[in-house]
Image (cartoon, rainbow over all chains, first blue to last red; front, side, top):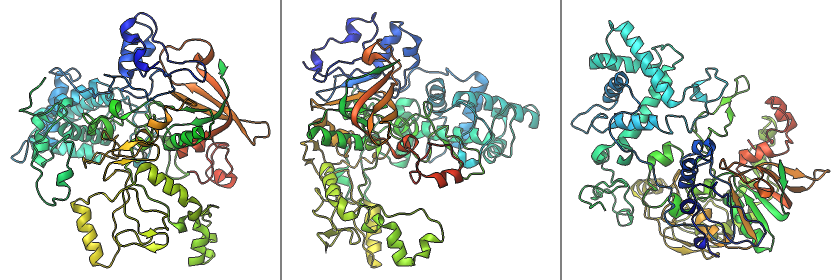
Length: 283
Length: 356
């Protein structure tokens, strides 16, 4: 029996617990390779435990134990495709937070004749979606104790998840700016003063209250800003692939074989993202 | 509750390069083999297809293919006066997990050790005097096996991968265009070198002008289509540039998925279990022989009760083999490095000497 002969447990019966594919005996036939994402979502829909719902992990650990025997498991339509971002507006940032983020990333990558600024490229939207999702929750961070300060070489040592860090840091920066600039908000400062504050955060010369490490926050903000600016547009930043066009990067292009030996020539391909490019017909 | 499962001939701990190759060799020898892999099943078409493999955010920055430190991390310190603190986010080194493991996201650079690397202690003593090693209390040793002992297996691995390169030393004869300093090869690379891009071309020309010996480095990213001895077919690389930290969507990078699994997964005497993490290798009373492994099911879905459905399983086997990555072996190995362990004030049974 091939794997395709088996009924699809997701479609056939959402009300029973998802079967963990374990077959007894050394000569049993192959078991079905279930799509992890859909499998877990199915479990959550059927209400068989918050365990399954909490375990959705972007195709990584936490899927069901599976046994494979007799063939290479494969099933049509089970690709672990990238999650992307959809919708519009802010779901994570409050209005004061949004003003800070737009002002701050606009100074990290300003809009100028060379290329779009971070705001024009959609970085605030990207950050907002990232912080509202698995990254913001610290899905890939170890967040347990102990929490001594640590050395710079020991890296990130905050007890905050990225979303918690952004929230705490923006509040602490607003507090600092209010106390040092006559009650003004960061977004209302002159760009020179904004740069001074950002430089103070970067160097650690500014001490923030409420357990926020200024250097850690600045490093994360800068890194995430670059991510939003240059990553595929499906994640909400790099609007119109403008950052790629600026640096001459063709994007998710597949084949450069005929160009490898043509040293110094400009590859003429227009930038393309996972969802194609302008001029392509969407189906 | 621990369930004792049906005994097999051999159980493999981890299913990356080492586990896949050992599985193939043991199954071909007629043994019943079970491989236990901590992470999920992964394959080219489903997990890193060409339509979305080149995702820098997901694979490089969000660590999609790597071990997640939220589940399991290490503590790190730079010297014994520091407090070791958790690695809260992956940084300098990236641990693989899942089927294929590091063999999925590696860069495909296939180097052999030099003959002198196998005799580090005697080689350096010969060159720099006995004191060069003893005076500094260096922990270098000779391996106990030589390059010549391993050469047939290097050759086998090259043929498995279809390695692209140019031999510099073929059966003791130096070849133009290859690495003249390498150990002797019994055969030429299975496929020719990759086409050189701009930067290495300029570097090669500059090095040659200075009388050096530039050569194209050997790669597991193939310059042309290749069918390996197991019948697995690899395609020519398209030079997309997304190799290390990424899975190859084009079947051009040698990995367990592209070289071994199409063959091994079809063998009736092979079983793979995913989301199963081995806790310990069980030993006989005299601790000389392994009798199986105890593992825990990591799967967080709903598990049926009884038998193989128990969350902890004991898999009896005539032999158990740790195919896990080096630091994983270290924490599971019997520690023989008493002195070094005391210097580092490590607890017992934590780190095997010289493994880390």
